[in-house]
Length: 459
Image (tube, rainbow, N blue to C red; front, side):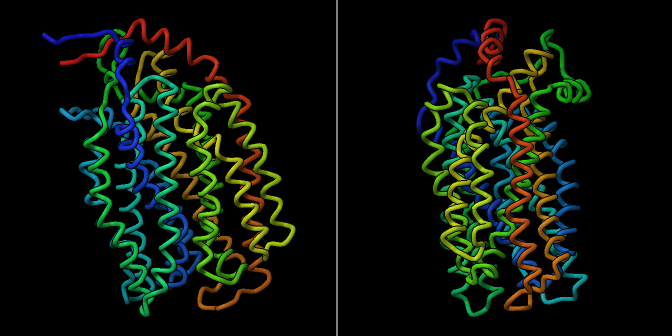
């Protein structure tokens, strides 16, 4: 006969620093892959592989839309995974090796016709995104299964985001200098990012080994099994989840545009391709410093209120670039201030999304960690796909030519204006969405009620 203990007692189980660190390190590697795809892949395709900017944009949009639909399948599978290790951690173990392998293949540049190059780029980009989903969706859902305590989730997310930004900083420090150290440019790209691919499986193994799932698997209140139709119906009626999906869309369009254009701002506006790493790290260092400090602030003022104050400040920081876009000092200052302003939202986004899982269970009696994170990932994938496509289309519209050492004034103006104004529009939308997000006030009541009625099954 199964032993059963009260759910409230499970909250007393301490989450060690080692477990928080192990959880955070999962995003160290995921962030590296995201940074590689967001910052380096477009310029690799246009300037090394020789694929047209318009074709690159179209490839990225089509792949992201396909993968966004695939995310829903992954989420449903995660929710139905039952192993002795839990339902999310095994995915990190299973997907780590293919994730690293496909990353290696992503930066192989075949000597072939344009049609074959485009086909190869499409297939490898689709594969890397599908495996990214198979890793990132269960990894995100793992937060909700480690604990139901909202503040502990925030701390887990702080470890996660800090590790993610440290990974991105390391990548930005070494990627372009290492690539440029090779006489054969194509080989430099292949070996540099191939090294990351070799290390990835070991990174996810560490997260798998030192984390633990504690929260009960999803069941409805009457104890019956949940159908996918019921899950989806409850999900799309969860208004706070809908708000978070749209927020995710805005954040990833913002991030995708700035990261995608960083390489072009460095190479053609500032005149030095090695500065792409500097620009990236100027934006990451405030996050590395700021995110770990946000726990007490968020506990005092709430996730929504803290995020709202920061987001307001992104707009004037973005407009600074208009003073002189060719000045490295002004660009770095703008990037740093935008990053500082985004610290609260960065620390709060994933815990806010995780709280919608509790709201869905409280409101509809259905708890679907995998589906919540997969459907939210849908917003991320569509946002990232649109932003990547927009970068390619903007370059094509501005008559960008990757074979030229310098670009026309019209091309540079398009790059600069897109870098400034598209993120500002996304920021305004974020402000509106944060104003209508009220779950912070409801969360204590929701958790208290769930603690009174739910049980965790233990051996």
